[in-house]
Picture (cartoon, helix red, strand yellow):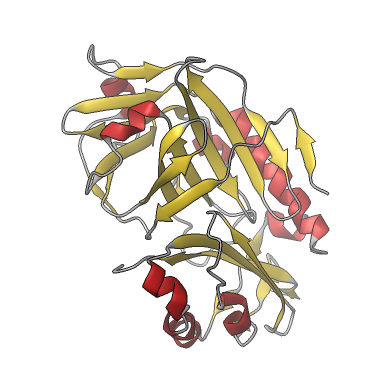
Length: 301
């Protein structure tokens, strides 16, 4: 059973068209755009709610009005620097079918153009934009150890989530995200305990490196279920494997982030043949760890 902390779980996303997002530079900072007179600002309806699941953590907040609620959801299936971001509600209709959207969070970073993203519907909320992998903060320096989880210091520079398209600005007025992200990190650290891994080791470590990624990904792509292809079914899955000290895969879990009735992903069957250079402690010792990624099935992607 998953543990719940002041949380009413949102409806599962229905049929989504998903692909890995690509970012290119754009002008404009979140706070400056949100201050425009014609910007639409969505104020919170309730506090952030955190769901402690067995294999994922969700941070959810509702915005707008009782008659026209909107939702922002951050989701992780493992303690990573990135997270899945879903924004939903009536105002999303203006962005739903756009070929590209400017998105930004950090007050000191300009919005970035996302040219490929997912779309769908959230029951009782409305149209949704789905960004399977959203990252904040600087990239990890080459050769330096990392800490599992989202950069809390960088999260402290976020006061809102801003979308812009053709001059139209929509702002989810989140408030400072430092404390909510810290709570999300606690939840994903708990996942490490559930999986039999050591959270202390993951506070400073060198992550596992996938050695035969191209071959395994090719098998996954080639085995897209033909029946699902014929029906045009498209979906996103969050995949996580446990990697032993010798680099072998001992367990695989696939979490379906969208509701697709008949699409049975072969990803885990293929991942059991994946080969990794094992994760290492800050002192260079091999350690049991995990590898997490997102599998997006999208026709024509």
